[in-house]
Length: 195
Image (cartoon, rainbow, N blue to C red; front, side, top):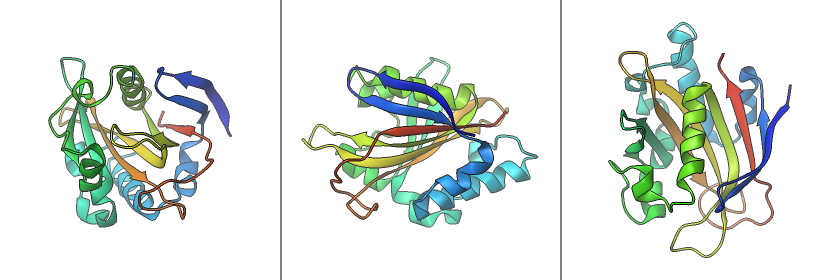
């Protein structure tokens, strides 16, 4: 079942052209990049081991998805209502030009982007749902839009509260891997509800 969730959502800086809700069991087949598949499979294994509940972020074992490590990130939703980077892979450090570890979204992104990023992260935690995005990204140092794929996975804290998002973002080349420009790809997002 593909159900449109919304169309043409914009923060003024970026537009998501299509948002689709997909069944949870379609996730494994939908995700194409091998490193993303490894991380998703690990999360699914943790979910099953937790009795089909959302796993605790501390259960993540990076040895289960080694090819993803350079592209991973983990953010925490703190009591002040802001999201903070806790772990940032080296490819993302290179992309930003510095490590955003420990910084809030407000400290990392332009003001026009923060509401969209917060809405996506809070959607992952609030629904809860897994988020899969195919879109374009710009950095202050680049003048060309670079296609990327991103997955956000909800995680709990030690008390079982939905407070963490573990994810992976990969910037793509013409062959669908690595970094570099690719022409004409539609920006899409997919939501996989967990309840």
